[in-house]
Length: 604
Image 1 (cartoon, rainbow, N blue to C red):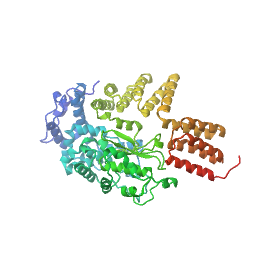
Image 2: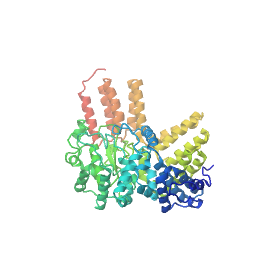
Image 3: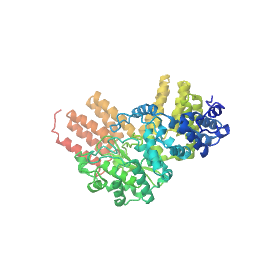
Image 4: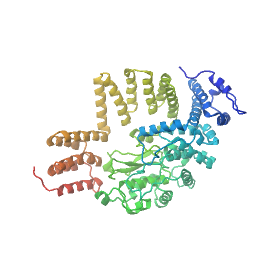
């Protein structure tokens, strides 16, 4: 049943008065049309005196009426007005405890965050001027971008404060570069973690001081206006620009790179190789920058290891308004690092500077908005850019209403809206999450929910982590109902597929199996367990296989005082792995054999 009550808006608004300020109530006809700028300005003036909380229910009623009448453009516009009104009315005393729980749940607490957060203003809307509130209400494109980008860990008091400061300085410039302003606000709302952009440099060498928001806004606009940008700022959304404004190098260094790195956008991948690789540091295991100040010019002058090459390349790109990502492998050894960038066709190139021996290394990059690691599927979503298409835009509208219905405890309406979203775009992950949550809230049995899970598994068959996650839910449900054969079949299907499509996942399982054999089985048997992945998964593999499998077992043999067997294990791996001459992996094998040779022969 609809939560909209016909006539409620008329009765409610008709009674709202505050001194001389009043306005005509919303009519049913108005609710079926997008709100006009004069009407929104009228609402804004009234709310300055009566409070936004007095208007929020009416804006939601208008959004629901338009949506349930099939007037999607009007529904979208009223929905954004309703969402803004609710945010303007929310108290900091309510927002901050919920926000802190989200930060803890997302595991993005770090040492640079303040220890205490206390309400500074009664309501979030007090951080925004009346002029900016009216602008937000009357610009649906920005509203859509804002609510699509908004994360539960964004600290809204500061996001609003930063947006207001940028708008106050120059409203016209803010309007032209609104996406840039939004990117700055969601990245600069909280301090970055102490190991940003990477942890392989001492604080004394690299102070890590993000610029003021106003300075960042002015600097990138100036580069754009001087035609120093490879991407026009107005052509990128905030979801791309946040990977520009997270630059760690100071502006004078970014300007140095503009003068000294002569690479076009089509040649940007070569920025990585501009930094001379330092095998001496890798051989001596000097993974922290040892050469004083960590500036772009110093890195160019003295060279570095992979992490320095990747950092340099990312900053060269950001200096030219090119979104870039720094990828790292596991650990702090500095061997696994490369970068990604948005090319001239607005496609993400995610393997720039990646060595051949690293082609099976799992890479991790951070989202500067949340400081979380970017998931595998999110990287694919970034590359595919389907979220910029009209079909996804319409899908998102239905998803937003589905989430609102669910929050209002109307799961049946949420399910209907979520299915509409999914039919428009099967990759709308939020719609699937809302659908499954709504089915549970409605009390559907596991047997009724499992068909939805099967469809979700099929929808994300090209996204290994998502397919595995939905498949895991499905398998657990089947097993709990006693459908053991179906559960085993689905589990084996995913394992087999991942073994073929994702060598890194298969490698993790091989390591776990090897570790278990080392812990529980005799040497002859654990050697057999080691030989199997070497002979199968090891052919053509690189450093990640060396790290996860070879060093694990060789070290076990060394600890067991079996140097001859350790050398045999290393030689077996050396014969099948991909070890180009002069590569880092060759250096690692050379070092390993040198260490093994230095061991005195031991009796059996």
